[in-house]
Length: 106
Image 1 (cartoon, rainbow, N blue to C red):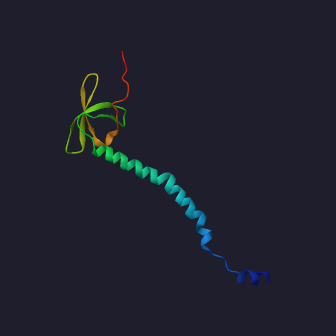
Image 2: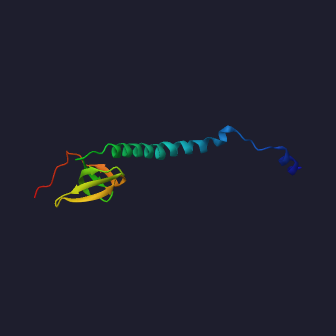
Image 3: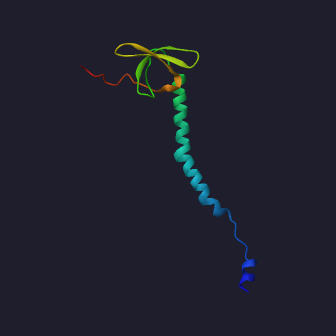
């Protein structure tokens, strides 16, 4: 009799049962994916706007001024104090150094 009762009841599949999964995906999108996309767009905009004379910092922490920009996505930067010139990839630039930063005095 109990087995017959189990066979007659069908599992309820309502749209509300998927709501927690949808909410989890929405939270991941707004907290993880959307900020990463914004940051990537800002980085691409910064890389596209690089000009000669701008002071940049690389992913490795090297700070230098851009001397020339090549056609093949390379930059030549001048690193102080010995004015050494380095050829780097444009994608190795992590940011611009603002002019407002105070310089060290010796």
